[in-house]
Amino acid sequence: MRLFGELAVALLEAQARPPAVKIDPINPLAPRKPHFKAHAKNVIVLYQVGGPGQMDTFDYKPALQKLHKKPVPKSFREALKATRHANVFEGCKDELMASPYKFTQQGQSGLWVSELFPELSKHVDELCFVHSLQSESNNHAPSSYLFHTGDLNAGKASLGSWITYGLGTENQSLPGYVVLFDAGPLGGAANYQNGFLPPAFQPTKLRDQGLPVLDLSPPKEFEASQKDTFAFLRQMNLMHKQGKVQPTELDARIASYELAYRMQSAALEVGDVEKEPAHLRRAYGLEHKDPRTVAYARKLLLARRLIERGVRFVEVYDMPDKDGWDAHGELEKNHTPRARWIDQPTAALLTDLKQRGLWDETLIIWASEFGRTPMMQGNNGRQHNAAGFTIWLGGGAVRPQRYGATDELGLMATDKPMTFKDLHATILTALGLDNEKLYYERAGRPERLTGVAGTARVVKELLA
Image 1 (spheres, rainbow, N blue to C red):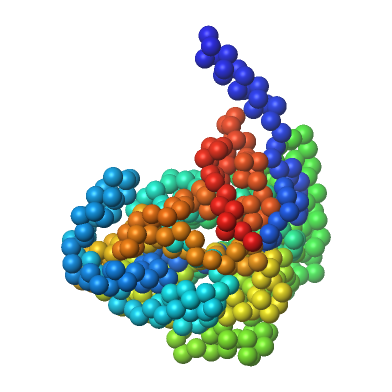
Image 2 (tube, rainbow, N blue to C red):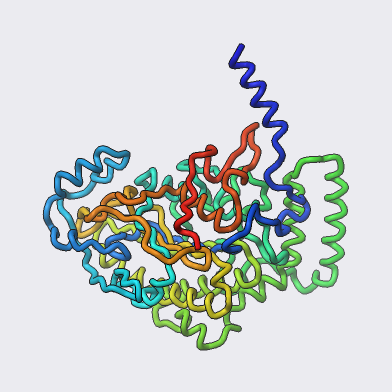
């Protein structure tokens, strides 16, 4: 009887719980006030698909350099085996591999940065490096889902969808949530989908070359009558909707028709990166001899143009091929060209945001699903490593610093370990959203990006 009583109370509480966000079904992306004063209002995610090695990029390990080709010390092995990350040794040789890259101290802070990033290294004093992130999975797709949706399994709502659900967007003639990529992330669309959130909060994939959206403009013979056609469709849809209280797929369809109509001029304008000054296009790398540098540069320049025009959330996937940063063998052949493709465009984006006054209102996140092992795999490669890896944050929302640390080999986070849930709670806080109050009622219970209430920690030390 007690169980039935508790269930009844839970159901009554669910019925009494007000919606976290009041949505206008016909204008679901209307801008909304945050829960409290925000540090930033827009987000750009630079997602490095595949897992770059932390000890080869931003987490310098002198001890690893000295122990090249030596076995993993027993103390490190035992410390890791006592955790959920014990499987990190699978598929690896019992042989440490030094980074093939030289590190130098950069900026007034003297932070160590790999030679892979000569341009980005000029910005280290403005960035917040988190060296102690941990994931719950050592496999690409589940860990990528965890970064994007807070869950190891496909089907949940993505970070971009949650943020546009909570805040809407400022430009009603452009999507609130945009993704940019050539080949998609490992695990597919489940990384960036809206999941159980209303369809209005799904992303729009824009092309960085040519028309941003194919078939956006009507044939010339239909241009004159298009406005009347849309008005008629809207009238018929609203008549059909009468009597339906909850937001429906029809509401989303009405909203998408109207957004598409408004986008016809706005999207064409925002996608015309050739209008940017020649010196700026050169700075990003649009005139680089390497076509992959040019491709990444176009995406980052388009990301800035979108944010500048009030788009709330833009994610750029660095995935020009099927491998990404997944260097199971011949690490140098993998990491060296990929760093070259992204280094100049990324540094140019940071400079451009500052020069345009967008730095203080934009949160930039450079991250991946996990890092790599200090142990060798195959022919001078590295295995996946979810036990400790590096990401960095930029923009006016964060405090420049080096936060947390892995052990002397870069194997496991030992100082201030941080989960993806903690990262999500911190990102939402930077945008003025309370991760506990941002929920969506589903099957009688509140779904959150950060999961069950009380399980995520806002890392306030990261915020300005």
